Length: 153
Image (cartoon, rainbow, N blue to C red; front, side):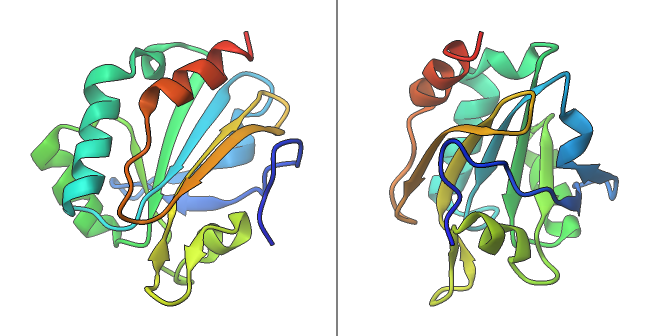
């Protein structure tokens, strides 16, 4: 079942590219979360999207915003990709159980075995305030994330 705006965001705990456990509910009460699902590290559209976030999304440097990105890649692949492309934000591994978090948000593509391009803006109380889900080959527009965050202020 898909998570919609107005729903409580399903909690999860995943390892980032450094092997550190990251739990969504740890941000409740003090940070809005931009949760970005993407299919696979090193792929063309995913690389361009995350590079755009790195370069053109200054909101990730705010004290009240946390960016979490999620794919089914292993932590080892994510670390290599983060090091290569200088991603200073969390790349979380939904590797095992394979795609469980993506499934809980309704963005896992069972036919391909990867996450669709889903983005969720979650407020400080843990409620989803905005979402977009694009087909795997279609990049998202960062301006939409910025607008959704601005509406939370």
